[in-house]
Length: 302
Ligand SMILES: Nc1ncnc2c1ncn2[C@@H]1O[C@H](COP(=O)(O)OP(=O)(O)OP(=O)(O)O)[C@@H](O)[C@H]1O
Image (cartoon, rainbow, N blue to C red; front, side, top):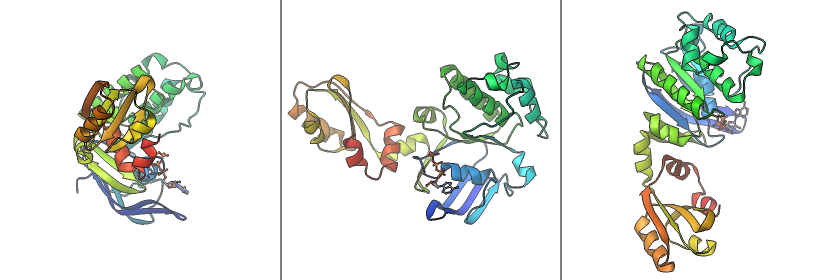
């Protein structure tokens, strides 16, 4: 009942395409969840439903306990979508103030500017902002209404290192105030460090849902790296590889469920191999394994 978002049996069809199939999903208050999936997996479709921008083909969507199309629900949601389309003749401060006026209990404009790292650009015209600064502005507009639910579609894309640091600091402050956050991103290292929960979509269905650690463990992959003189054909012939990345100067990286078997075979084929490392697979390795249907052939031949 207290779920911030509740999807029950959601399917969304666009002509012949099933963008989402029988999706059940609840987001708990205060959680930071990452919605991951390859292009076309259904992430934007799910976010559009949470924002009340579209109606599902079947199933029920509840956001903050109500229909997301109701105005009272929408004022509790902040969204940072991929494209920002705002009056560009205004200054940053003027635009943030304009948005603040739309909400019943906004934060101060100064706070929104500080949270998004835009204090120095406050007087600058929106039209003069760089790509990364426009993403920061989009974040300021998403948070100025003090939303209870914040939906962020690839928030850190185009942000520089400082921008990303300011963004994550801003997210931490909002979470202290109890804000629930759902974001999509392809920056899986950031997700691994910060998210409470990872939801992986593939072809409109949830294929994994848990903490970043539990998703990594479920996949059970290890990463094996070494330098050798083995040819591509010899590397491909090693047993147990799920993916193979051939880098510069003989450096190779495998993901595998059977690291011992692979290492034994590699040492036997190339006794001179060096810089051997066996580590736990990253969230990115797990993601590839969960979402790539032709993983072995496609990734190994990459
Ligand atoms: N308005 C639409 N009309 C027709 N097909 C659509 C529409 N919106 C989405 N789709 C299709 O539904 C599927 C899911 O699309 P969606 O945009 O939700 O994926 P996504 O996971 O957000 O992808 P990306 O990472 O590329 O943004 C895709 O096959 C897409 O082509």
